[in-house]
Image (cartoon, rainbow, N blue to C red):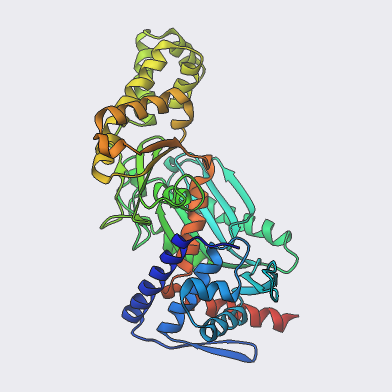
Length: 438
């Protein structure tokens, strides 16, 4: 296994920040975690170094050796050995065979236990989705259900809870030794205050204001939960798995019913003071495209749209499909929308200077001409220096980006020093309970 130098530098920076964070937040609290006959005392420094160990294992491909963990984090052999043993005893990591030989004795592979999982969920405008994902990112069970946010938060959240139950049961049936749920992450199609996990004045469905999405799921399933705007989660997914891998500054734009953006700045997700960074709700999105097309249908200016309106309500997807079939009116509607979106994004490109802009969302998937018009508008209106090396690309993650980002966020948060101690305590308790019932 090879860990790039950039990853080593980033992990060492993480370790320093972890130490400062834990010293400040926990005031050197001490936590005793027991597993069987073994116990380990976790103070702030121990949690910081353990979090650094976990980060190396997480970034590795299939696991890391103790030597690789030490080389990457700068921790001594004794500390690495002690932390790995404690994390294995607590039930988070495991010794999973041997790594390939480099000439000497084969090193033991340290990896996440395959039976430790998180739930990643998505509340989109017209559907909900839930998946059970291992700590290494393997999806064990997943399902999407058509239910619209306009049906109200109680109905949607109750349906999501039932869906999570179903997916956990399905994943459990396929796993012989049982699974342990560690946390839940959910992306919401609307502004979310990350520190509280509550929705705040959604521009499309006001009835969703001040919904305690995070706390409701945490209480319902008895594990930590996190909620964020779905576009932020798309940005995390692109950073870890998509076109943003290895890029410190990137912009992910979702063009759906409305337009939103997620910002990765200096390698970290930028949420802003209240979590609303990247909101572009006033920019023309799918709803605006549908409204423009509907006027053309009602007025009779577009025969194709008039015929389509008799069969079903006009949507941005209908407009995109007709445009691909050659309808000039629909092409003009999409061109105008792409021009509007491109002008807004050109301001963001000048202001933020990203290395890559990733375009996602249902409207963006309506054809290459739409993205080409956005790209051309950005290049035409932005500074030459800002666009000199800029890449503007469609997402390679497709419709999975939000759900993948929810998993990334959950594992990110669970493995910080602030949350790691609690997770290890829960895992230890689950291990003791499982052993007692055998």
